[in-house]
Length: 210
Ligand code: ATP
Ligand code: MG
Image (cartoon, helix red, strand yellow):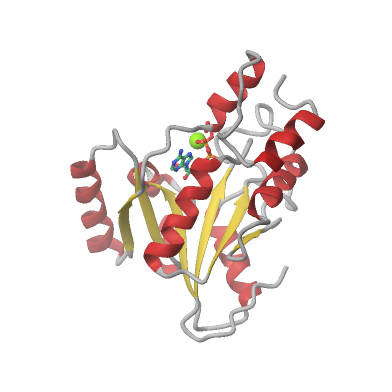
């Protein structure tokens, strides 16, 4: 996939996740951040092999990729990348950002890595975090229940020590998670309206999460 950036000063959001399955919480988060930060596009990157989870407890990569594509089809600003699922290696954000930068072919692109604000707290445990913080900006989305005071201290520390560019933003809370959707399916409960209909149908057709 080639990420075209016609205008100079193009801004791209990278939204990583397991997407097992993708749901409206992810989509609202991405769309809200796209609007708030004036991003030209959001690239969804389904994780291949997560550093901490391994692949045992997550669905097949291609199924997660297909569901993410179905969910993103109706938004012209959303794209889905196979960068992580095509690689057998453990998926480290630093490698993903470098690969996407190489594909963009433009020096005028600003990259924003979108993540839950809680991830910012542990960013110094990520692979090559100092280099990563110099390669892209971070947008941490807060959700109800997150203690913002500790987060702001952490962000000040990251800015002072590494020159990091980190933005915090509040996203309307949607209490939806993939874990809850998987549990509902196992228990025979409805998942309607928690995720796009096309993804719900894909789950039914492929007998997922039973
Ligand atoms: P699981 O329950 O399997 O952990 P999840 O719903 O947390 O799945 P992930 O694929 O792990 O989904 O999340 C990808 C990104 O989306 C993370 O940065 C996470 O913080 C964010 N996210 C997930 N659900 C929501 C939601 N309801 N509202 C806002 N952000 C969300
Ligand atoms: Mg999660």
